[in-house]
Amino acid sequence: MVTMLAIFIFIFLLTFVYAGIRGAPWVPTKKKDIERFLKLAKIIPNQKIYDLGCGDGRLICAAAKVGAEAQGFEISLFPYLLANIYRIFQKNKSKIKISYKDFWYANLNNADIVYFFLMPKIYPKLKQKLEKELKHGAKVITYVWPIKEWTPIKVDVVKGYPNLYLYQRY
Ligand SMILES: C[S@@+](CC[C@H](N)C(=O)[O-])C[C@H]1O[C@@H](n2cnc3c(N)ncnc32)[C@H](O)[C@@H]1O
Image (cartoon, rainbow, N blue to C red):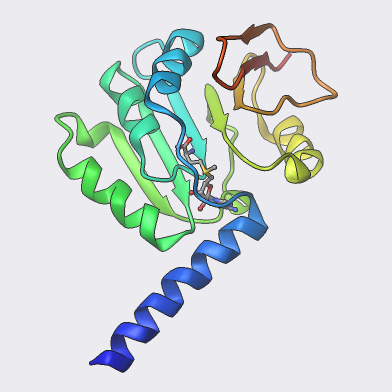
């Protein structure tokens, strides 16, 4: 029994470390910043929103609440399980999809809005993926770190909180 528990904990920790290498460790976007995200995103009902590394899923659930078709990708087991539990309690859960999937293998060409809170060291590779896959007019919102080579159409600045950067693909 103890061995089983140790194996489970080891696997959970392993996926946590792996996520840190593949994109970022789990650190949730603050509640107030989810509200800022919603204002910035100006979601139109049924728009498709992807959170690349959705953590506990609160951001995609908030997006679904205002009408989005929200999809999160997550590879760290603990936040993935939390996200699924959180999803169960949402009224509009049919609009929320949480995939246990590495977002590097997800095709983003249907996305209207892509959000991510990831380490800037992966930005050069992610920028290439976004430029290849995103459709004309799709929005990208990043938290904390900007995409240096792109020009944001808006930067949401609130004293004492990280910036949110809004981009639009042409
Ligand atoms: C900084 S957290 C942000 C969580 C969530 N987006 C939020 O804003 O609250 C980054 C998340 O991305 C996940 N992650 C990192 N690399 C990933 C990958 N390649 N595919 C899927 N999830 C990944 C991590 O496990 C972590 O939960």
